[in-house]
Image (tube, rainbow, N blue to C red):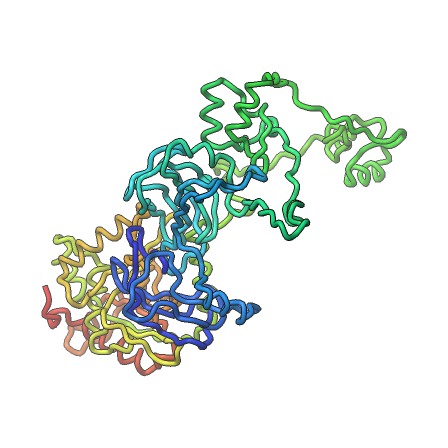
Amino acid sequence: MPALSSTMKEGKLSEWLTSEGSPISSGDSIATIESDKADMDLEAFADGTLLKILVEEGETAKVGEPIAIILEEGEEEVELMKLIEGGGGTEPVVETQEPASSSPPPPVSASTEPQTPHTKVYMPALSSTMTSGKVVSWEVDESGTVGSGEPLLTVESDKADMEVEHLGDDGFLARICVEEGASCDVGEVVAVIVENEEDVAKWDGWMPGASVSAPSPSPASPAASKPAAAAKAPSAPSPAPSGGRVIASPLAKKVAKDKNIDLSQVTGTGPEGRITVSDVEGFTAGSSPKKKSDTPPVSSWKPANGVVAATPTARALAKKSKIDLSTIAGTGQFGRVTEADVKSALGESPKKKKVLTGVPAVELPSGFVKYSGMQSAVSTNMEATLTVPIFRVSSTIEMNSFNKLYASVKPNGVTLTVLISKAVSIAIQKHPIMNSRHDSNGGIYYNSDINIANAVALDGGLITPVMKNTNEKSLEELGEEWRDLVSKAREGKLKPDEFNSGTFAITNLGMFGVTAFDAILPPNTGTILALGATTEVIRPCDECVGGMRKVKEMTVTVTCDHRPIYGSDAAIFLKTLKEVMENPEKWGVK
């Protein structure tokens, strides 16, 4: 059961959109979940077969509890069925473990999981398409107190930055497993919260997936006294790199600061050389900090006797110019002779880049830049559209009367986006097929609500805030709702239901002077409408003096999924939309 919002604790299985034994593909809607915000479709993240439904329609499950088992390609059905019959399943998003009744086995490594009352916090799925998240910031420091319902961390999902609240009992943040700026897959452990403050230090240095269980001796088997073969010998600890980033737990940093210890001189014994609090305390007991050298290290590498170190281009130029390389002092790395050194020996001065007089030089970006979470989501969604059969239909709409209406309602806070969305919803009511989408079960899924999603460009991304039930609300109500949605989008605070519940999409590039363009169909949508700029043109007019008149027109283009929607459907819809926008006095709305 996914967390479809930051406050969702449980979900109700409204409907299964596929049945046991049916094949499913990544991106297919497999179920409808009723959360604390709205009903949302749950998509499959991998290809496979729906092997077993664990939560029936109408039943409720807590976030993180298994609701079904999918047999992925390459998995053995027999093993999964044994897991089902034995009551097994995937771990919940929040797992609480009580201390064992007997004495815990002796630790076999620094990463052995402590046997204390604790709660593991997992990376939540903040949207139905989110597969990984990036920790933007921790709102609580390690060893700090955590209250139920309080913000614990901020996560960058594929849509926006969202605060994640602690939904369990009050406790203490014993371990941060994913540092700020790092990413992990949905479902991976990001932190550990303990009940008792004295247990905080016991988790220092622990990392998920690195736990090693101590073998339990068996009297019947002499081999039981030997260590498990799978347990790897701990690697030799290494000191932190001089001048580089020191990796240490927050508690270790705090102790080192209190004791005035330079962490770069401490040898870390934690995972990947991470410095733990025990490393700091051990350092103070029997060591003294080493004094850093202000002189950078000098390489001892020297070329063999009789060999002059030079770059290939320097050798070629020296050979062409008939100059002895041994007579040139090299300025390159390790004293190598460079092409510039040879040119300098030949009396050539280095060429300077010419800059046009009066035109300042522009520093252009270069090199690889990794996608942000939002950009990755956009990329994935665009690739998904390559398998959808689409077609496009365009029409020209006269905007004179529409612009007069806009001028009259603009002082009331009604934007052009709101007004066009209202017109579209009126046209959709007459042609509900345009509000539908293709269903993977081999049919058409009709949406009962008209929820208009409008594309909004953000710094480094794109998001589609949704105005819900657009056909049922007044222009003033929609204007207020849209202002709130845009403000949240700019701040990255939109909830998943506010950007992924659209049934019809609109995108507008008219404000940039673009007269017409084709839009790419978003996933799980049947239609997207592309709006161009309004332009003035001269048209014939029998009733006008001179037989001509000046009008303002806008070109609109719909992109449709050809599986549920046909060309005639789109053409009739655009004809109705044209009539609605050219005759706003007939709307009958305020």
